[in-house]
Each structure stands twice: as C-alpha cells, then as structure tokens.
Length: 190
Image (tube, rainbow, N blue to C red):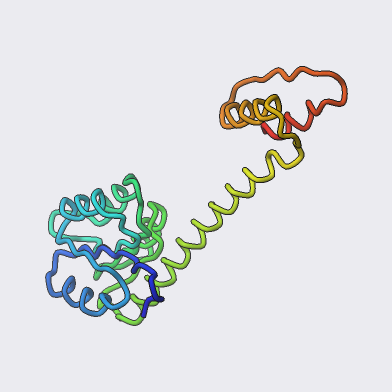
C-alpha cells in the first residue's frame, strides 16, 4: 500500500493482447496508477500527455515493435524506466533491449510477483537517481559561493555575474587588486 499522501507511481502497460493488459492492470493497480495501450501510437500519445514513471511493454505487438517504443519513450519530456517483456526471449534480444535503454527484460509467461518486484525496484532506482542528481545540483550551487562573503551592492553584483557566467563556456577575465578574491571567484565560476 502506498504511503499516506504519497502519489502512486504511474505505470504504462503496452501489449497487443487484451487479456495480458487486463490481467496486469488488475494485478498491479493497487500499487500503481495504471495506464494501458495496445500499440505504439496509443502508448506514445499517453507518454507525451502523462508523466509516466514506468513502462512495461511487449517486444512484439502485431506490426509494432517494443524496441521502437522503447527508443521513442527515451525522447519524451519525462522518460519512463522501461521493462521489456516477450514470449520470444533470447539472450541476444535481452542484451539488445538493455543496450537501447531498457532497465530489465522478462519472459512470458509472466510471474506476477516477479513483475511487481521488478517494477518496485525500477521505481526505487529511478527515485534514487533523481534524488542523487538533485542533491548534487544543490551541493554544487550551495558550495559555489560559500567562500565569497559580503552583502554590499557591489558583492551582490559579483554574485549575479558569477551565476550568469558559470553555466556558459565563455572565457572570463577577472581583474582586481592582490588579495581581493580573484582566485575564489574563478573557482566559483568553474
């Protein structure tokens, strides 16, 4: 059961077999906010309109390819963690799926407990990656200006200039008297 006031993670299940989609939805809807699609076009429409956290897609769906969907999903604004499933599994296919960006690969017939565990692990991995990235960014921003002190309008202007220049690749000339903090400013920029 999800924690109180914690939104459920979103899961998109893509399979051309209605029974598989419905069975997975039924088994997983207590843990996830589940969307389903029968093919790539429908799945891409959902991926572009909803922030999907997890993608569970079949490898072969009539004329559609789960590999194509996997690659397309990586280009949306909020790329999901993808798990591929297939009845035609081989080591080569699994390696190719992972190379193209899949987080995991499972073979049919599916073990629902295994699928649920994989989805939870994938979600945990995604959340840890996101948290790590955010903490690194906060740490970088916090420590950039730690060694610079001052609250005067001139120092505030220096802080603003550092923040404008630091994300760019521009060459910067720092001038000033000896002991005024030119080296500290240079470190803050880089």
